[in-house]
Length: 401
Image (tube, rainbow, N blue to C red):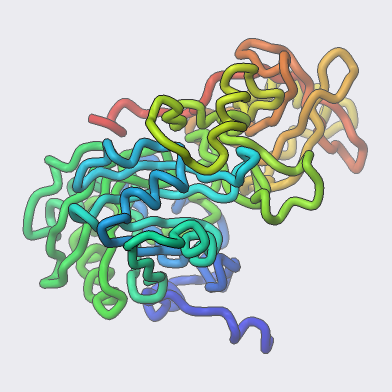
């Protein structure tokens, strides 16, 4: 128990702990975070897809980077063209070591002419300072000072319009704006980790409880539901979004070269601004990979339901569907040879399909390729037929409307 007490509590803990019926807690970046508020995930998951889900994402690492060389530092660290990032705009990006292997991923928000917010999954303060040598820039970690909520789902806009002083209709995809909730200043970005219409709300930690209460009260007519990270985990797989330490290993944590991944392997080719001027970390390696094509690639895979039925039916069982995302390596085969592995797999309630994020070797990662994925049936390893598909699995039209 002593180890538990060393974990931090988020600014919303007084509310989330009172609602967490099963006391289902998870570790997240040194914090205790709600895994689920109910004994099952159905109500929370369907709030994401049908209504509005309120998720405490405060454990995200947060850094304020400001000063005359703030843009220069972020342009050096990431493959995105930071010079094109407008005030009020948000970039999603990964960042790499010198060999072009991913260290972490997160968002960069331009708050003002010379001020940015960087979020990350791993502590990044040392990495930022190492690369800022000789630059006129101030780097401040404010993870504990800035609380964050994710409001996700098709009704999220209506909820915010009810509780905010100014309407949020004008906030475009991957943009942000300042606003006020319950008399407290907040910043609202149209971002999220569920693949649905959604927003993230950034605020001073001291204002956490009044803002939470206002959102719950204002969202009551729209089915607002506190949601834990396990339901969000299902939604992010449906959206084709990967997770550090689950779908890829940070290059600094990898024991061997084969455990490292590049942005191209993770499907981030669209975020590589190789045409931008100047040096950035990993540029030479990423240019080579862009020319040659990635040896591996993370893709979507849909498992054939009939194949699952046959595998379980052979021992007299109906298909056994996991109730949450499986964060485990499952071998993938083609023509009897292992050609990759799944890192996240789940039953998709909205698609009524068993889906997986699968890492495949070239040339097996093209859409339409037929493979087999390992499944366990009555303690025996079997193989189910599956098909490579384009990501995301789920992309509702109202997400960008």
